[in-house]
Image (cartoon, rainbow, N blue to C red; front, side, top):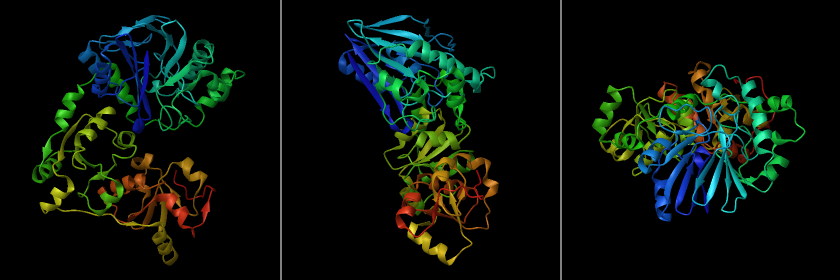
Length: 473
């Protein structure tokens, strides 16, 4: 038997490949399915099942394409109602794969169809449990997402279901089995996940706050629901795509992999409502970009930020990328349901400049330059675009806080006549923020290279963990 976790850092997502005696299963696959097919072919194995732990919200799963390309059967847990052929397994149903078995454990709470898969080896020993978003390392799945799909499901009701599922189905299992969750730290599907991506169930019983043996249902509901941030706007749309089906990723890539010379790119930008998305690194973007383009770097948490800041997943997109990375960007957009890339700038920004097209820049300074500037001009405002929790922990004295997550709701609070030094933790989010505002006519924004980390290292600026009255959010 082989067990492989296939972890994708930008989504903090874990898919799984399990093979036994020439048969394999894939659990919670990403949208692009060729890596799973190639992995099975390497072992000379046939993919028998695609096991889905639930209808995912944070990414579009590859279950439909994988089933069509391999003949594998899609499996969901009880109560799932997909609009395509799938095995809706019963609670306790056993699926045989080679010499091993998977037992379906219905664990409603994160969603009502949420299910875990208990793996038993060739000798019938319980060796691992694939928990999806029911149980993470250090946390459990948030109980407020399914209510976006059905108004009858309050987070109170879902949290109560989750409490029962954990205690009736998972906690009675042996301490030495391995927990294989669908996500790790950085995912918006939980609030305090560990950076570890597997652990023994016994350790989780000792250290996971939600598995305390003496915890009442009321205490569980309170702790699990406390401090939940609103989920990204694209989550409900991804759930519906996973339930109803979607266009093959091959067609999405073919459409997006449309090379446009500068003239054609400019015409497409002028004649459509497409967003020009520049995926280069922040510091490179600052030195020269197409006017009105926005920057979300491919080398950061790209897909989640696209999903947060572009509210319509049907939004048409034109890409400016580093040459050679166009298909990667189209694929990563498709992972979160943004299937309407209509082309990319052939030759990148260099081709645009050689064609004599207009180029814009955004001002960027070091932390030391910011400090010197502030000493001579007290009218400049420091704007911190980190999350409120980061800001509350520590921030520049007198700074105002406007988290990037809420930029679309709070643009009116930015005064176009005032100059702002804008920073985040390291420079990624602040350039996204500045590029969006620049595209909307805000010209007095100065990016701080290296963000708060560089500011602290430079010294000379008062830092406080007090939440100042000027906090905007």
